[in-house]
Image 1 (spheres, rainbow, N blue to C red):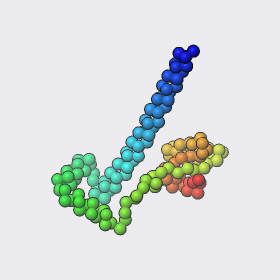
Image 2 (tube, helix red, strand yellow):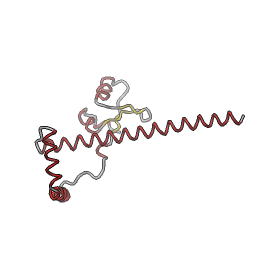
Image 3 (cartoon, rainbow, N blue to C red):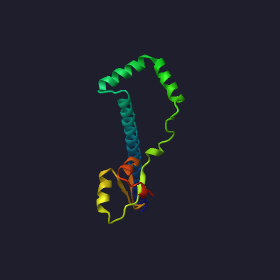
Image 4 (cartoon, rainbow, N blue to C red):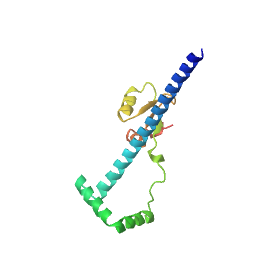
Length: 142
């Protein structure tokens, strides 16, 4: 009797450990995706403003900056004194919840193709703000 009960408890512990690991993996994956997105955005900004045409040019620029520590401090000073301050939070990157009626199959397909995810609990679609704008769904945000 006690042996069976201990076996069931061990099984429950194993299941809980697996659930915990799955949640940790999901969190790590989300963090990686956010970091990757941020790196791509930052890279695109510098590529555009510095007119970089290759990875090699970016590496040369990084080497020049690294070899001149004063330039890094000067850039930081310029950033802090800039009239446009960097965003203080990532809320502008938080996904938006969009309501789409069940009958609107074409729109649902476009949302899914744009990276939208269905949220069963909210019974709505989750999309990045940029895609909401591109698809013209601002008036459907809930």
